[in-house]
Length: 431
Image (cartoon, rainbow, N blue to C red; front, side, top):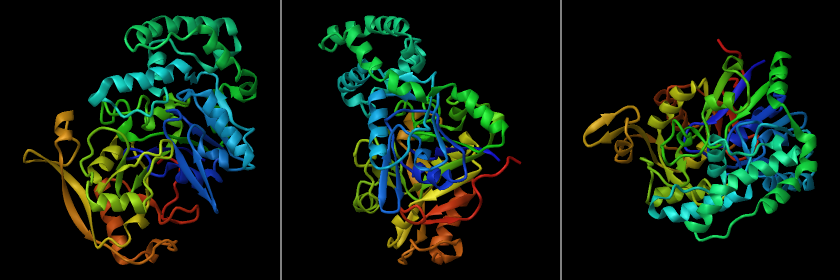
């Protein structure tokens, strides 16, 4: 059976958690391969809602082993807050595996994230202030602290001391903050060591072994394609590789082990944070999508920017990720809208673009070119077959499937676990 990757095909918050949960009973491992607690998945099971930030969604599925891969940056405080909250609700979290090579978000990373963002003023990125960017910067600068370092206090202390030399100069002389001591950082991190120890392993070895044995491994991306540090709307992006390629680098599993790449896209578009968004609606329709779709961040609670479906973005995501399938979520949110626009191209100073413009300025100036489709009034939450949908809803799905350059294999028609239409199997062998 296959190795499969799930990635966001827009700017995040597309419903990846629900898609992962949908497949959870069929997979043996679910792997978070990038990001940290700057993103969230909301999973609805029965009458219970679970908001996950750092943990893979597979932690909610009995018999599925959740894995935090080496590409993730971990705030240990948040990790155990999440584990404790799940344990209190009767969820067994004992099978969680954590890569010994994953990097840790030190307390000074959170401090720097917040003061730097405020210092940028109007040039701010829109970071969540959770230390994700500074932790990845330390990783690239070879100043990072890895999970394995917790188990050698001499090495840990030496790394913290080396990292704080420049950071304290910056905090004191540039930002007028107090210096951070080696002892306070060391003590905070070591306080988690014993509790973390049973979960730490060489997750790359475990995952490759599982694939060798024919087990199913699902790689779950945080954030989304348009927030990828290389392929997103730079510089308004996250600090990690949120596209399908990141699944390999963030887990230690080679690309030949991946059989399917599943892109998650809403039936409209949302974005949190700064940066251009061509189909953004600053009118009653944006308010309606936000209110009906409950578009507020799982992690931050921030209201999401809302707009019509952008097929230029989804076509780009299909190409960059090599998507084999799309899961279209929240189709039900469009119920009751009499005419539904979808962006089919961009206009930049009179020039029509079918694909993303090459430069940032052109993308920021892009005006959406819309095609409008007739809407529907019928409640679709009970539909379980594509043919159950109203004809106009079927036509809308078929149209954006063609525009997006990838088949739509699953449709979300409500927030519940069972409120889906399955058209094609998402787990399939390559070729």
